[in-house]
Image 1: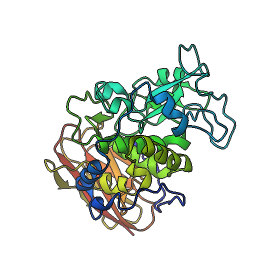
Image 2 (image 1 turned 135 degrees about the horizontal axis):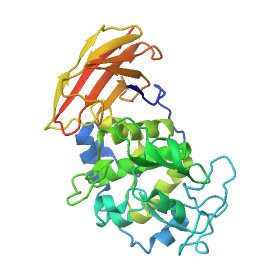
Image 3 (image 1 turned 180 degrees about the vertical axis):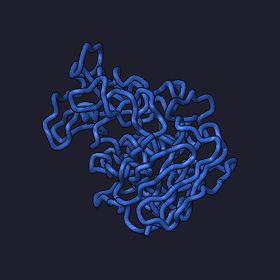
Image 4 (image 1 turned 180 degrees about the horizontal axis):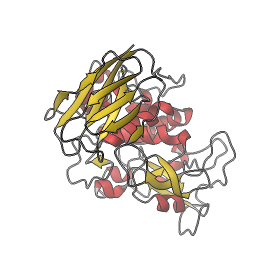
Amino acid sequence: MRITLLSLLLTVLFVTTKAQPPANYYNTATGKIGTDLQQALHDIIDNHTSVSYDQLWTSFKTTDKKSNGKVWDMYSDIPGGTPPYEFTFGTNQCGSYGGESDCYNREHSWPKSWFSDKTPMYSDLFHLVPTDGYVNNRRGNYPYGDVASATWTSLNGSKVGYCTTPGYSGIAFEPIDEYKGDFARNYFYMATRYYKEDNGWAGSAMTTGSQFKPWARDMLLIWAQEDPVSEKETARNNAVYAIQHNRNPFIDHPEYANMIWGTNAGITDEQSQVALQVYPNPAAENCTVTLPPEFTQQNNTFVVYSSTGLPVSATVTITGDKANLNLERLPAGFYLVKLSLPNSHTTYQARIIKK
């Protein structure tokens, strides 16, 4: 079995135009990492001012308006190009629809069935966005994921099909590359705003309560890195802040995502870490990892991280109880190999030196 992990630039890209939070807004998060940082951020953005579900129509006019006054719909827009159609606020509000371009509605990017239709997340603007009603319906409550062979494709290139992201092979919805980071940071917000406030949430193939399953966590980190914070997100963060009086920390501070879910992602107080055996180490181009007895080729997450905590490109070939890692495309340095098994309280990992 060959698994080609998505590649990432090992250098962090910074956005020059960033949302400006109030002075000292994040002071209590300073110096924290992991779940301590997540808890601190939760406490900062908790207890926001909720709007009603009906009020979202009005809110969208300030949070999701293009420079030409049209609705900013990430399921139909083509950044830098000409979208196949555009919606006018109010005039094209759903209603009924029979196909793409008929009308826009209110998309729970984190599907409402995952949190069992509870409030206040039901109308939280940080994950609710205006989208084409028909495309929204085609997405349904499928998780986001990478799709190689689509069974359906929207006019802007969003896709439905079987997921090719390592760790999940069910049906998924893939937005276009230019908006993957937007949705990833929406999800980081949800996992933090509702951290330990997810009692009764149904969960999904992507989530357990408000927290990510390993495959989803790693994919979202990749999406966020490959699609950095945009001016659109900056403006939206400020607009939502004016309404809800809280912010998305992962737009203000993109680095927080890796500080919470990076190389120590998925390790909780109840979990243990076991060292994997690697030979040779240091390695020039290839090394072999001995896998634990309970390893299977299905439903596991096998990821290589850079020293900065980001998933990187490495080809993994698994034969029996051995995994061969091809590291030839990686620069010299330290890397972390991490293996997570389903329904296990143990995470296996090893530090590798690439010569």
